[in-house]
Amino acid sequence: MKPDERKCPQCAEAIKIDARICKHCGHVMSDGEIAAGKAAKRRELWQGGIGCLVLVILAGLAVAMCSGGESPPPKTPQEVDPLIKAATYMGPNLNIDMDLGATGDLPVERAGEAVEKLGKALKSGMPGPTAETKYVQVVVRGPTLGRLGEEDTSKYFQMRFSVSDLRRANYDNLTWFDILNLADEIYIARVADPAVAQFCTSYADGARNFCRQAL
Image: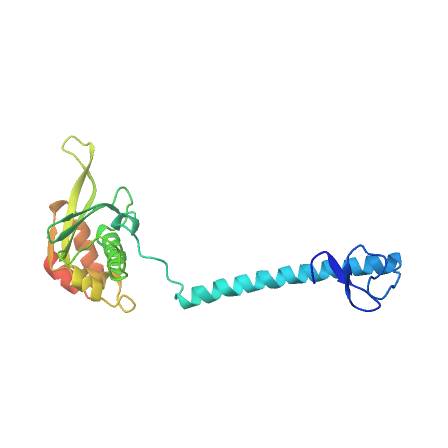
């Protein structure tokens, strides 16, 4: 039935919504019958609209369930974590520059969390790395004071990870300090020695490989 039609209360055939006489059976309708017919039509249209909305919502949920509800991987390393300020590809290396800024966080812990996120992004198919990209070189910088007491930024430490190790890692069963243990080369600047020593005092068992190389 069309939106501008309703049923005749006598013969149930379709008539115009404002009709007073049914063209099929000749029934003459009272004002009450016309008003009741219009009200029934409004309910019918409203229920139809609600039904369509429910179908749209269910369709959206079905699409989300079929896709696993997963969001697309980040397009660049900078989108992975705000700690990552720059990323460049040079030969076999993906060079990651992290800047702690004035966060006050323990630098090793914060860098470990960022590397974990980066590894997940690589595993999920983040564009950029090619077959030539073998390593992720991570440089972590933080705030220091210059010789004259001015605020400055210095390299705290540097770590190298194998791209294949980061992609193979089972992140459901690993923590960020497990990821730090995947580093195959570690350099610690003197300015970061106290922070690294503090970290390894707290996480000596969990981050054993990292601390063995760092201390």
